[in-house]
Length: 389
Picture 1 (cartoon, rainbow, N blue to C red):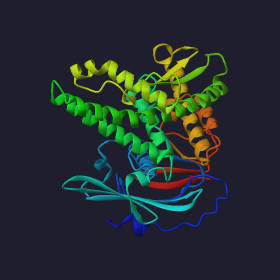
Picture 2 (tube, rainbow, N blue to C red):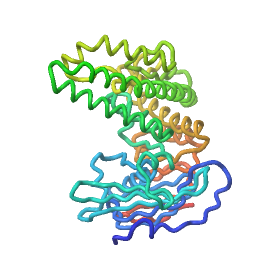
Picture 3 (cartoon, one colour):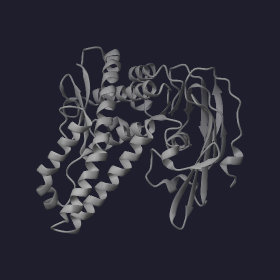
Picture 4 (tube, rainbow, N blue to C red):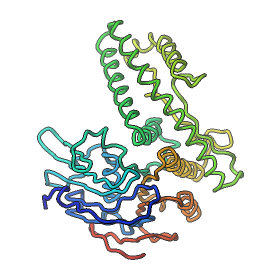
């Protein structure tokens, strides 16, 4: 059907107690991938979706994440989310958050100009920046298991996504910074001798926005490192050495203050100016940052086994969940898309114990898992059947 989310999203009266947590109490989908329609009322605690591949498990998790973050964790071509041959899809949900009950919706419309998304909070249309962070989620997908060995952009994306959900100001600063990088690059590409005054203006803007990004990332990664160390130690003891997650800024940071970082940024731009003009691209700033993983003092990407690398990423994800909860005073939703099958039973149990305090989690798996669940569902051909609890 073509009904809109607004009409299909009825309120479900839930009494989950007064604990501070984000709880998704209802999800309504219309024409989302292989779901023509779905009305789903998740439980607090662990919700497990079991079934063969290509039945709709990942599609359901993608929908929950999209409702929370406004974006897909699976594809940059979000028109693929709209059911084949149809002009629009809608997602709607009720969530209980510390501020009260909220109704979120996201509608995807395919038109002549491509895809257009419309966001609402409690029925009122909002811009994306105002939508983001209303219902926070931590997502873990199989691709994340390669974070340690993957490109720096993947590690930056993880930090950016977490900080953008936590702080609308960070998202705005990131967008502003990205815009000036593009404009500076266009200027550098457009001429062998670019306009010096305009270049200086772009650099000034980059320093202003970039300094805020650097300080936010530095503090966040330090918090991740502290938690990930403790989680990792609780799983493997000291036999493999201590896990360390470090922020590697493109700008040398001696003193973590705005003035000191800005001054270092300016100095590095001056140092790289000739190279930037010669190579016709921006070579300085947080768009070149990285996150380093070390185990027992040595680089994990070069010297760690696949099992050690995956355990480090698991610890990172548990830490991300914990940091977002600690900073906001509110537990985010946890989404685990088919990652347990990639882990041996001991690591599966360790990971689920590590996020054992979660208020609400959604896990997809092709096989039953050996942990207590709040609710189990079998998914076949985009149909949910309750099978336990």
